[in-house]
Length: 136
Image 1 (cartoon, rainbow, N blue to C red):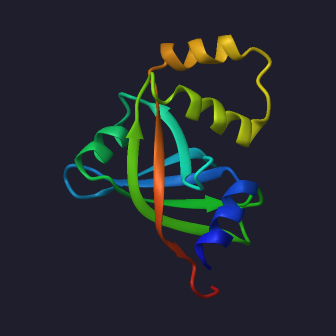
Image 2 (image 1 turned 45 degrees about the vertical axis):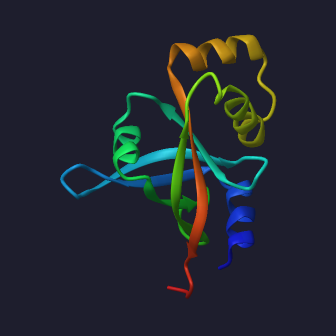
């Protein structure tokens, strides 16, 4: 698996599990929706007050396991350093991610207001390592 194959897989599959490190050193796992931004970084939308954001503010390293819709079969693991982009700067990235994953929203003004109301942030992964490197 190489970085371009991993990006291609993420562009076709948005279900993922994010792994961050809790304050006690243990792993926290969270189901998320993943997409790509215009720079080829992996993007995840989440709430500002979530535990994953707190974990990433303390340690910006994370892993993401991206799965196909059938669960078994092809998958990819992405390791990287995560940048947290907050509102208002994150808004256009949130719109871009929605479009890349779900298409056009029926009411973009409503969507933007929901992002503000929910205090959304954008997690942006610089892809540093991908896997698997072997089958099975």
